[in-house]
Image (cartoon, rainbow, N blue to C red; front, side, top):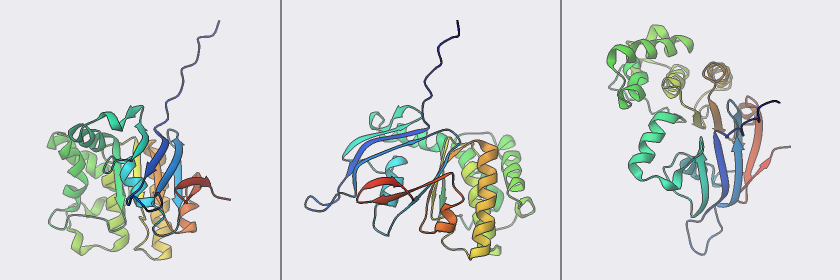
Length: 231
C-alpha cells in the first residue's frame, strides 16, 4: 500500500488579513487571503494607495496586521517577537527595492555580500558566493567597482544578486523596474526570472506595469483591500 502523501506547506499563506490606519477610514486590507507555492512567481498590481506596499511590509514582518495571520514556511509571524522576526527575515526573505538601496560607500562585492555578513557567514565563503551570483546576473566584472560608476540597469542587477545570494525562500520586489527605461526593464525581468528559476525561490512582484507583471506566473489585483485574479 502506498504511503500517505504529506500535505505541502505553502511558502506563504495569508489568512483574513485586515489593516486600517484610521479608525474612521476604509480598511487598507480587508480580509485578504493568499497562498504562494514553492517556486511560484506572483505579480500584484493596483492603483497608488491601494495598499500594495502595506501588504509587502506585513508579509516581511515590518508591519503587523490588525487581525489575520501571515505564515512563512508554516511559521506564524504573530508568534514571533521583533528579534525573532528579524532573524527569520534575514534568513528566509530577499528584497529588491525600486530605489535599489545599494550602499554607495561599499563596493559591488561588499553590497552583494551584505546579507551573508548579517547571517554570520565567514568572509572566505561570502565573497565566492557573492561573485557567483554577480556572474549569474552578468556583472561579475563589476565586483570591485563602486555604485556611483554604474548605470541604473547595472544597479538593479546588483540588487537582484544581493536579494538572492543567501538563497531565500521568498523574494519581495517592490516596483523593481520603476526607475528603468522599457528596454532595460525588460532585460532586468529576464535576468530576474532566470535567477528565480535557478534558486527555486518564490517571489512577489509589486508593480504598476502590465509589461512587468506579465513576467510572472500569475497576476492578481489589489482592490478594495482584497486580492482578485487579473482577467
